[in-house]
Length: 116
Image (cartoon, rainbow, N blue to C red; front, side):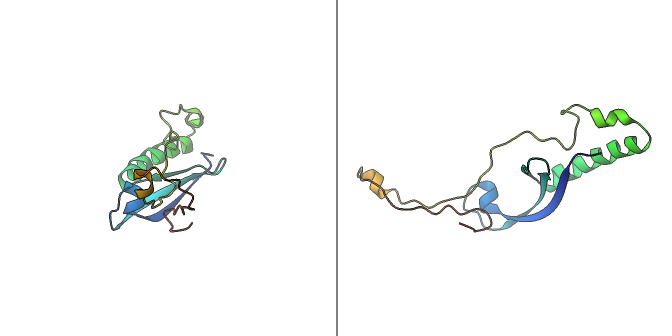
């Protein structure tokens, strides 16, 4: 169908997915757009629903329906809108703000892979 997408199973820490300090992990499917390298994370429910739609579209394509290549974004199971993404987290001590003190420390931002 020439959608230029790859899918990969990833294990994501719950704290980076939920944005809170929750322990545990969550299995997600990472969809990457090969044209612009955008990435989306789907939970298993969304992936299963989309996979049925993808199979239906592929079967129509195999049956000779070439119009399936030119469907709208609303009907395209590979299309996702651009969303906000949590890039990482940082721990900052806010005591200096309470006293209106200048703050000149370097702060490390850590992503979900625990990389700085």
